[in-house]
Structure formats: C-alpha cells, structure tokens
Image 1 (cartoon, helix red, strand yellow):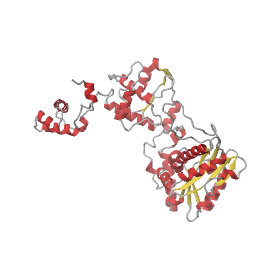
Image 2 (spheres, one colour):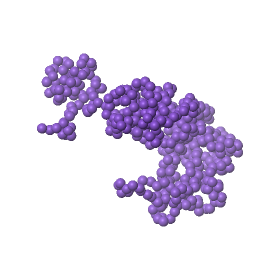
Image 3 (cartoon, helix red, strand yellow):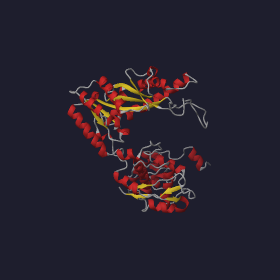
Image 4 (cartoon, one colour):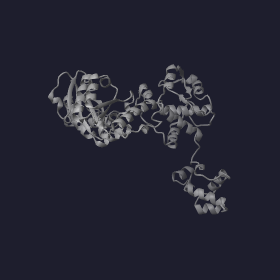
Amino acid sequence: MTTRAERLSKGKRRQWTTDEMLSAVDAVKTGTGLNAAARAYSVPKATLKRYLLQLGSNSTSRNDFKQLGRNTDLPGELEKQLADHILHMEAMFYGFNTQSVRRLAYQIADINNIPHRFNKEKQIAGKEWLSGFLKRHTQISVRSPQATSLARASGFNRARVNAFFDLLEKLVDQHGLTADRIYNADEKGLTAVHKPGKILARKGKSQVGSITTAEKGSNVTFMCCMSASGHFLPPMAVFPRKRMNPLLQDGAPAGTLFRCQENGWMTIDLFTDWLSHFIQYSKPDKEKPLLLILDGHVSHTQNLKALEMAREAGVILLSLPSHTTHRMQPLDIAFFRPLSAYYGQEGDTWMRKNAGRPLSQFQVCQLFGKAYARAASVETAVNGFCRAGIWPVDRNVFDDSDLHPLTLHLLLFLRQIRLCHYPVQRCQKQANLSLLSLPINLQCTSLLLWSSRQHVLSATALSL
C-alpha cells in the first residue's frame, strides 16, 4: 500500500482540470447522478461531492476552487493588502527587503490573533512562506534597487514634469520642430580603470578577480550629443591635464573635439567651445531653429556667452528640471549604459591582448572609439527620446507609479518625525501596535524601517 507521500511524489493528486470539475458540478445540478458525473468527467467522486457541498446553491466559478495543499498562514485578503502595501512602499522609495517582509508578516498574524506556523522565538515568518507568497503574487519580485537621492525622489513629480512638457509642446508647435531638429547633449566620465565584465570561473570559489590598471583613476569627460532621428554628432573629450598630447587622440571617433582641463571637468569656457562645435556640425538656421535639451549644470544655464551664441545661430536651449535627468534625459536612459558596458568589454579585451601592461589615458580614446561605434545606433537614439516622452511628445509616458515619489507634504513630515530606537527583544509589541493600531489595516502609508543591529525604529502610520 502506497503512502500519502509516495502518492504525492508520483503525481496521483488532481489528475482532473478545473473545466472538468466545473462541468461535473453543473451536470449534477442539472439532474445527473453523482457516480455518473464522476465517471463521465473523470473526477473523483469524493472530491466532486465536497465541492458540491462547498458551493451549495451558489453559481460555480473558477475562483471557487482552492489550490492543493495547506491553507496559507495569512488569509488571502490580508495577503493581497500586504502585497499592495509592499508595492506602495516601493513606489515611495522605501521598499522592504525580504527580512522586513517576513517580520511584518509575523507581526500581522500576531496582532490579529491569526493561527500561524511562524517562528515565535525569532518573531519572523519562514523563507518557505516568503517563497510561496512571491509565487502567489507574481507582480512582486526581489529586485536590486538603484540608489535614489532624496532630491531626485522629491523632484520627479507631476507638476515639474508637466511644466517641462508645457514648454516643450509650445516650442514644437511654435517652430514646427521635427525629430531631426531636436537634440540632447550630456557629459559622461570614463576612466582608464575599466569595470571588468562577467567571466567563467570555478563554481564555489569565494572570490574571483580580474586584472585592472589600478583601484581608481581620474575621469576623462566626453560630451555626447544625439538627435531624436538617430543622428550622433562627433563628441568632445576633456582630459584631466594641462597640455594636450597628440597621442591621446588615437582611436577617437572622427571629428572629435579635444580639450584639456586640470580636473577633466566641463567648464563655462569648454561648454562654449563645444557649442561652437555643435553649431558647426548641426548647421542650425534662424528660420528653422534647432532645439538642444540639456541638464541644469551651471556651465549650461549660467553661461551668457553660450546663450548669446546659441541665439545668434538659431539654437534654442531647453533645460531639464533638476533631479529628473535619470528619467527624462534620452542619453541617460538609452545611450550611456550600453556605452559603459561596451567600454568595459573593450578594456577587458585590451588587457588580455597586452598582458602585463596597464591602461592609461593614452588608450582611453581608443577604447571609447570602439565602444561609441557599437553603442551609437539609430534605434538607441530613437528609443531614448521615445522613453523620455520628448519625441514623439507625450507627457503621459510616465504613469502614476512612476510619478509617485515623496511629495512635499511627506518631505515636511519626514523632517519633523522623531524616530526612536527600541530593542526588539524588549519593545517588539510597542513597535507592532504603532504600525497596526487597527486590525488588518494596511490602507495607509506605514513607514517601517529595520536597522542592521537588531533594533527597530518606531513606525508611524501616515494617511495620504
């Protein structure tokens, strides 16, 4: 006689489909006998009888059938509220890690007197529960977040985005701008110390290394520019030195403008030189002006000489709102990431071909030129402007989940809130009650921040 575990391992359970069970239930309700319906639709008689008793006189539905196995530790409705709360906090840039979610699940079950199988000694839900929770709520996954400053979180909001698009739409309508007359320019810093890519290594080895020139190095600044139609202008390279050496220019893209600055930074004078370079290759006309979209760096916005040069040449300068370039600048969105990846790959290739030799500034343009040729494609440029909503002009490209960062009211609240440290062992209940003052109430925005030293910050519920 086989055991239950053996039957489960051989897949003996639920050999029927939901459609078959629904058909069998409907057949019994229309007068067919229980045995006949079970045989006709190949469903177990006992299971069919149980579903008939559960459904009673209610209409049958696919949602009425529960999954196999035990019931979940938290009720389905409460799990749904927890899932919504996790996504809401992630949109507020205060996402939970796996430990926080497991502790929160234990607190919810404990404060609402729900029977559970969680670890009462450590006051945390198990890893198996988290795994099942993620399988039941497929819209949630474990992700590595990008560090986002408080300024960026508060700066990217609907009001500032709408103000920018009001200006953009006005300029497009007033001057009849098209994709080939809309450009975006920005700086990118690259160094002779490249970032190695992934390699094959022995499985289980604790540390895997790859040769680089040094631990860190000085940046060479490249000013890149592309249009919404996919046209890339020759870049500008700014080296961190006082005098130019012709050997530094080897391998750079054709037409590159070379300059030196003590720190390798973009300055007001260097931006003016680049703007002259831009005018030379883009050939603007006062009758058909070009739109150049830039970030709000001081060398761009507080440069009277450059502003006068742009006006005389027929170039309209439009600045992006501060702290929004990570979502609204086409070069940041679509071009610089593949450029950095290709630059790292070219650095790996050079180090393998020249074993024992370090990379220096004299190879930076050579590596940049190869990476630039791979990254500068029409598709990349078009996708960048499209995802930023700049061309085609679409202010609704960002939905509410994108534009749901910390608002001004929440920022003022966070500055005033006093977070007190409580040891977990002594004041766990106090932290729980401050978070869940009402049973199963997760409709408000709750801030629950766990420290790395087994302390919990007092949580405060804020209704928005």
